[in-house]
Length: 120
Image 1 (cartoon, one colour):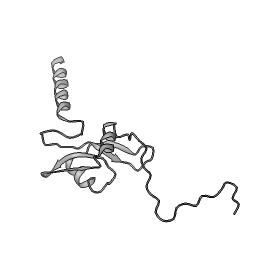
Image 2 (cartoon, one colour):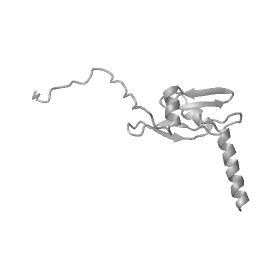
Image 3 (tube, rainbow, N blue to C red):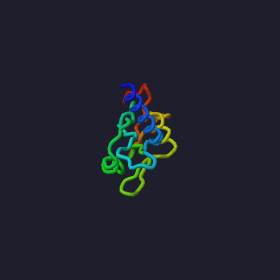
Image 4 (cartoon, helix red, strand yellow):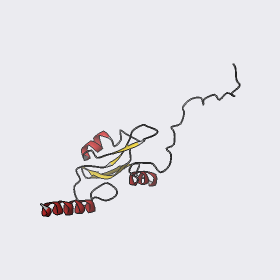
């Protein structure tokens, strides 16, 4: 029993060594891509998910513009999304942004700000 547990721990440690901090496997065909999926919430803007490579490509890459997706290979091409310094920092922080997200720009006329004593 102890040998099996130690063997599984060893296999797990080796697997962790193969999967880099970027969330993709080095030198092996990956089955899943771990990335930060944008939720639209101001208080919890991302959740970490690991869909299949095909699901990542067809369901997120190009469709979810705010997701943070590390480089992954799909059908002989390498893709990533928002994998700049801020995206990498957010991913490496467990999908928690290190700085507050920038609110989306307001389209059209800016809001009218009235003094507190305005009665009109």
